[in-house]
Image (cartoon, rainbow over all chains, first blue to last red; front, side, top):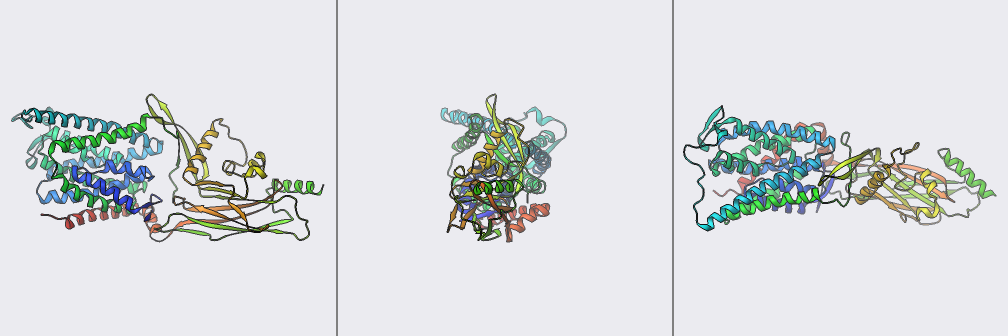
Length: 310
Length: 256
């Protein structure tokens, strides 16, 4: 069954979109990530214009992180104070990201920027996570005790910068500056790539600020909810590329898939969980690298000049 | 002798932006003038019917009639980009702009173009995918523009937006013909111009143009105009719907 997407201006199979977003939702529920980084490339692969894919996935990510935020809020695993700082930085980053997105689109290098960003970001993060997961697994096997997450009385230097604040729920006493900077960077990347950035924010908060993982996921979902809500509205205002029908289809599939993913996550042990997530992120990066490094079948591409499109 | 004179007259006439030649007249009609895009749109087609009306006094021609139906869709600025190798990676380097190019183009004839038209004549009369949008005067000064134009045609042919069907016109009787115009699902909205040309002996005898439009209707139309006219409201509404669906999911799947 086909449905015509009014903004993307093409028909698409409802079951295909529901199936895809359901599968991505399953993965996002399994790993606690937004899934935008998988969904955007898949939509582009289905001939949906990249601008529409990025903007629409932002709406989808906003909706699906709403589900997560409500769940974590109910469990009291959400630090609103830390979240507020992340959101403020995230909004600044998102505005910069949307402006950058539009100027790259005008220059005709948007595709390159997106591809390059995917390659570097995903191979680096995926590689690091894989390295870490393998090391942890090896340590597990050899029977050595896991490294202590936080030594009493010690903290990395960036936490001691000025403007220190207490975050009781996150058990954190740290400078606001690096936290806000992190939020700006992730908001920027999220708006350009149409991803929530949870897969970057969660490890960053755990590794750089040593915040308990239980609070990190809920707080990062809260930050993603706010920045992606902002990104959706900004994309709608600046380039009219949000497709409401597509967003709704993606949400329905994603939300249902995420429920099953969340249930499956309970039967997965921590080390294989991290290994699988690392492999997933790494493979997305490599998939984009292939596009960048191999000679294309058709070196030419045709685009319609934007502007007076109605 | 008489035929030579006729051909000459026809050639002159076509050169003078061709008014219909005197012996034949062409009548063409479309099955519809409006293709509506609704939520179940997956492409459509419409029919062109035409009749060659002969002046009773003129004698029958030795050459058979040939019909060319050219459909030109809405025009936009099209940009063709070429990927090139820079160091280890492939990036878009060169680009050529093609202003006022139709995103949709279809050419249908009753037999292969080169059987009834020389290449030169095809270029002059703008027949065929490569010629249909050639600028009326002047030349392409950039020597490499041809490969960009070929790439443009090749790419849009791949997307079914450009089509050439050299058996696309059927004669139902010696004077009555029909042709199907296929509108693919990704066809742009806007005005489409249909040009029907009648050939005999390699020159235009008559020309008839008509048009139709592709429009979004109903909810699709309302959503598009909302996205463009009230972008803020549209964005907020989309977000509201998304958040509502997210909230609904926690209610439906609540486990604790």
